[in-house]
Amino acid sequence: KMLKKFSPLMVRNSSAWQIGTQLEPSLTIFDDDRVDDNAHGGAKKKLICSKNGLAGIGGLSDHGTDKSHGWKESDYSTTYNHGRGGQLFRFRNFMMRNMGIPQPEADIGPEEPLVVVFSQFSSSKGSRNRSFKEEVAHLKAGLYLRREELGLPPVTVEAYRFDRYSVKEQVEMVSKAAVYLTACGGGAVTASFLPKGASLLLYYGESGGIENNKYTGKPARLDWDYLNNLGYLRVHWIPDSERRELEHVTDLILHELQAVYRERQLQH
Image (cartoon, rainbow, N blue to C red; front, side, top):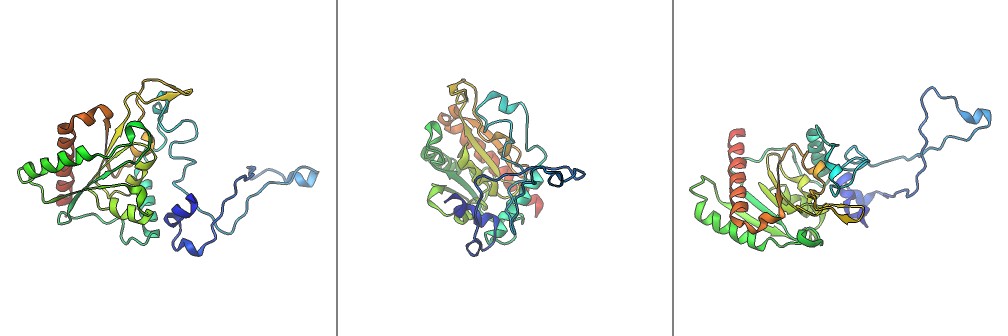
């Protein structure tokens, strides 16, 4: 099911391909100068052969092999994706072309509308399961009172439950956003498709850390290693306690809209 859903990101016209997976592959790595043991009665080399193959972001996972998603304090002692901003942006564009979206790398000009997108209920877990209803209402009120004073053009505020849309629809909606606000976690990966220069605002649990199946009281900035190294975005982490400070969140969004708009003006 998951392969069928996401394969269009990796292959154009994926419906014409018979894409399968090997659940228990066996692979042995040999040095180039190693003599074939089979000639001396040893075991044959174990190979995986395929006419076609699919590849991901160039790593075994989005956070490496020696740490978890950000539940543990030790997950923040090293980074796996530092310096990969350009690579991740090229991979974004590659996936968008496969979805039939033209010129994904093109900059968005100042004449294009400024769009703020809220990702509703991106997780089913605790404080990450939120509608952002109050944040949306407060932002709209702030824009009504302060937009012209801040020198901003008209701003559109949108909120979606992305699990109700196809992958292509999600990509198209996010790729036009100037500011994207979501709870951290697996659902936040949609932010990969934000345009260059956009702002990503992520809520995280200040005391949601878990280790050995016990709460540690430490922060849980899930997928921090990946999201924080999307070098083509302006990334902000907002502690859950700030959700009660609607004025602070609105001020941050307005500040980011100004920054995105100025950058678009300078580029064009």
